[in-house]
Amino acid sequence: MIPFTKHLKLSVGILCGLALCANGAQAPQRINIKQLSTTVEDVVVPLPNEIFGALNKLGAVNWKEHVRSDKGSNFTERPRIALLLGTVIADGFIAVQAEDAEAVKEIGQRVLALAKGIGVGNSITPHAKAIIESADKRNWEHVRQELDRTQNSVQQAMNEVHDEKLSQLVSLGGWLRGTEVLTSLVKEHFSADGAELLHQPDLLSYFQTRLQAMPEFNLPIIHEIQDALVEVKPLIDVGDRHIPPDSVKKVNDITTRLDHGIVTRD
Amino acid sequence: MKRLAQVMFWASSLLLVFVVLRPAVLASVDDAQSFALQAAEPYVKQGFQVREDYWGGDLGSGEKKAVRQQLFKGNEYWFWLGTEADRAKVSVHVYDSDGKLAEEPDGWEKGHFAAAHVVPKATGSYFIIVSVEKSPEERTHWALVYGFR
Image (cartoon, rainbow over all chains, first blue to last red; front, side, top):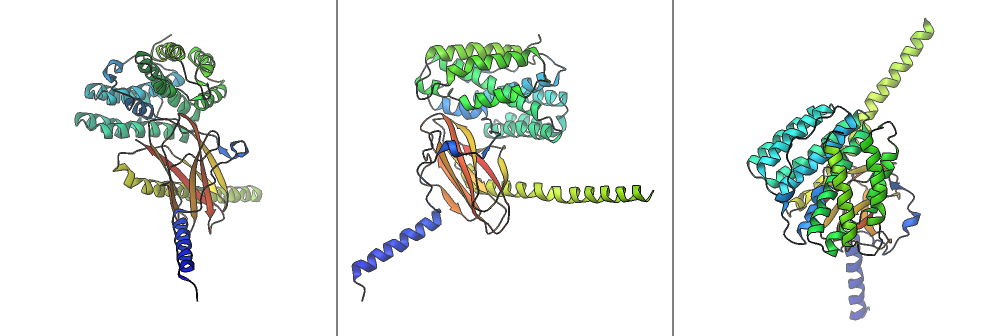
């Protein structure tokens, strides 16, 4: 005969076991990161609105101040078009934050023109149409989704024709424009939490590595970005320390300069 | 002439194998992505924006893969892992840059789906560890998608 307390212990044990089975084996509380030799090389570069979303939670932001929808320069060099395309897609996310339908529609047209310029217009046409239609209906969630799809389709189309390097330049253009706006906003209303959003040293290293593997793109803007990333690295790679206002200002100066270089003709 | 015919025969056979097998391999990773997106579906209603971009590949039973990802404090993230292999068991866990488990306790594993929930305490790099715990297949295709709000 098994006493009641033993029954109880056994039942509790079985229940715990079943609960563990349903949720899977417990993950170790700590792992040795240095032993991870099988890291996937390609990171998924965050979308500008991923950063903007975090920034929004820190307080009201005047996104309208940062909306930009001018047509800008036309380029013939494909790397320049790719960088500009990334920047314009980021502008699309800013216009969505500001809920500026006219700017979103102009940006949709511009994205399509640039995508045609690098030979991937066909894959973008349905997205550009969806962006414009959703902006008309003020369906901002759908516009955001279509902007993400646009970037993804451009990059997939480029990868299919082995233009991975151009695809990486699209991501880089978007990241630079996103960082410019982030630093501009944090500079205006400084907070340690806002500045912490700049703590992206691995992402910066990822772009540095990718740019080093593009010697064939021998353009002044590419060299300028390479040099600028070297300047930015120590400002944001601070470990557990806070990123001070002065560093935010410096990163803003650098990214504003780069953005000007990307959108305007030499 | 006979030699040329032989070369032509082998070349076309190789091309046929390539044409037939390549879509099958790609279709499997695409299928895995469809399962990962299926796992993400209920969260979209809760306001999560699911990224179009994803990671994918194949792993043997008991193998792991680490993915490094930049996460931002203030956002909330879910990572969803899927495979098309019916009887496979997969898992996904998230660690911070010091190797400390960084996920919330409501992550789950249900056969060929798994998910991990992260509310980052700091902005920075995180490691997402994807694992095929067991599988009847020699290599199991997997896909990982993520969403944030």
